[in-house]
Image (cartoon, rainbow over all chains, first blue to last red; front, side, top):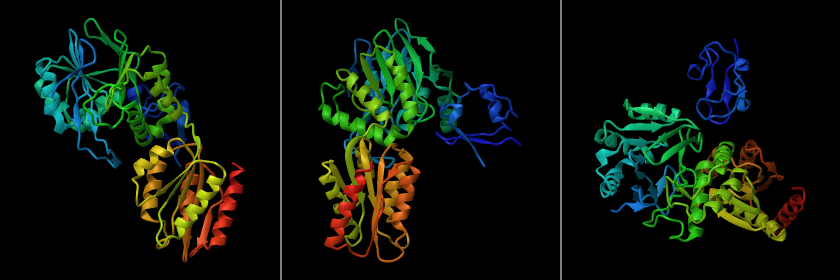
Length: 54
Length: 389
């Protein structure tokens, strides 16, 4: 299963199982497959400010 | 209780919290204000409310201009209760009013108040027409909550900035020309250091957006309105968001039997010898939120604690936890302390300084009481190590 990613700014966790349907990311989308212009739904941080959660 | 006119159709109708001294752990020795703004255009509009216990004060001010039940649009720029606390009663008074907020604002208000209000959600770039004037919206995500938003009225060049550019300052004066500027600036600095500091990247985004606007007035949600000194406060925000520091040292410590204090003063001597301004803070005598004001532009931060029961002192732990959350960057740290046995405190302090990504000067750890010779040696070593920074 694809990894979860955590926003280093606010702590939001992107879970590929859930996706981010409010912002057009379907459930089941791996973090690497999210478009580059997607931002953290909580704090607006860019994709590059996310780190994988072990 | 009077409204204060910003021009011939916009009024400050907020509330003054004269007695506030502790804002969730931030000492507000000068009290605060919660600023709400009433726009008397074709659509009568209110920007933000006040804390719940000052609702009647806000209503009294609004009533001097217009019947509050006639408000058509209420803008909630921030979910935090010092600005949204008046909403539940106001929405009962104006059930047909449109409640304008950010995407995260709607989520936050709904979750907090459990009310299905008539929301209209705005994002950066959206605007609404009020009549002869309009408001453009700018999301201020994480300055300092996910929901923060600002609005700009191009016709009057007023930026309603919400928490950005605010200060905790209770006064009946509303404009920066009416109150000592050094106190306004100091309180703006303290506000930034204690509220906005962790979010430098996000603040920079807001500053970039603000730099494209022609601004005559910044009307924040706390304290004084910027009118004569708009350029000065925007410049300061740019410096703070860039983590620009000065050649300035802070020595922050607590002590049990004076040994850690003796080390603190030896370190101070080294900075004096280097002609670097230095400030001593014994944590028993000053509040951590006041220390943060000074941390905001200090390059060198030295933190000392003796070892108590295999740990640093709780006062030092409290300061470091608070400071780590506020995440000042690009500093030089130095951990120091004395111990009888065990001696874990210095490594514990240093670990937190390292976690913040600071450069470190070699730590200083003394068993029992440092004698005069050792204190001279410590000062000499710190002086020499400063050359490497």
